Amino acid sequence: MIANSTPLICLAKIGRLRLLKALFGSVTVTEVVKDEVLVEGKPGHSSISDAINEGWIMVANPKQIVELGLGKGENSSLSLAKESNDDLLIDDAAAIRAAKALGINFLRTTSVLIRAVGRKIITKKEAVTLISQLVKAGYYISPRYLTEILAKLTT
Image (cartoon, rainbow, N blue to C red):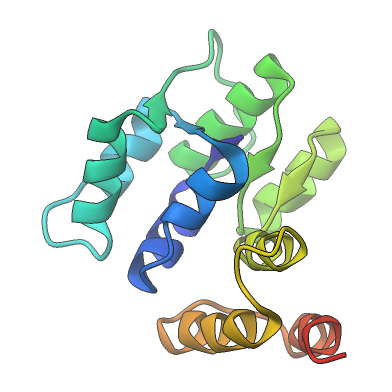
């Protein structure tokens, strides 16, 4: 699993970064993403730094960056996911469109929570609470998508 900055920061903000380790064993970020998330004082900095030091968040770079008109982190993450034929954890709408166009399988931060419920790592009730915490922490979910997610988690 390749991860972009936003999912790492968001999961760290709500104290659930380790869901990635539980679900995927390890996660890879590019050097650009590492630099974006390891800014002193930025939310999640210490838990992401700990995960890198523990070795379950690893750093790798693509051989070639495909310029997609996105941010540096998104470009590098998409390039590495395409090159390594790996799934991508990303939330940016334009980057998701690019992933679809490039045939890259992707997950959103909210998909991680749903997958964690499916694997019985967290309960549906916990997932609803965590989604609420994500929104309070500044994570944007369109009303339509939020309704879909909550319907999955409350039935």
